[in-house]
Length: 296
Image (cartoon, rainbow, N blue to C red):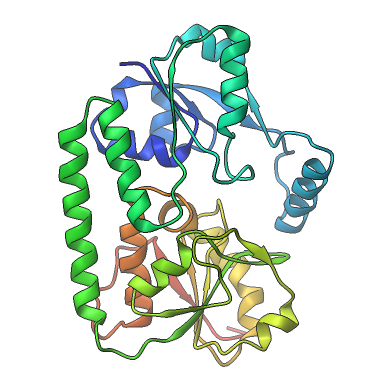
């Protein structure tokens, strides 16, 4: 089967299911190994090297003008002749929308099967793993993977059950600040915390720093969308100044928080350690880190 994955989370799922060699097309946001294996047919329409505030301004400007945030190489996609295309309609800021893909396929005369993956909860992410497995001739592998992931989730739930639940503010962007939505509040809850300010299953929303300062917060998790741990730590330094009385953690959000794939379970385990370090094993380096006090 020839698979075109226009969504990084779907690329991750296909890879974990052992079908990486079937990938013929991916996006510029997919992991490096996938980009080496397959052609990159989706790129960003934004200039490179922008700071978070400039990215936010550019996104707002393009959305207001009705301009796309991603560019699809239609000719390259047509030439690759995929049998299955994986896409999404969840967030037009995060990836190419399914509607754009369908229009492109009609224009280039491609009759590929299209699967849109649009989870809003952890259970829906696991269901997406099964759905992709069924379409990619890896149904048995998908069922086995989901069983392992559910066992790990149950293990975390057992460890944090009955313990105090810290109130956690998750910031999905810092300039300007955005409160996390979709499955992210659920990650905190499954990790033994109580999310504040976010919307379960809803979209991420902008906020004012004064509004956030008034929230009852025991810990802050800086999880900037699309960024790894090093960048999250750099951005968390300013957040640390605004919440001097609460521990602040930075996490590799691109891998473990905002990408709707199997590694969300790694993210839950990492957050559980941040909130319950005396009961949960420390995760491998590179996933999450505590930010030092102001001035350190």
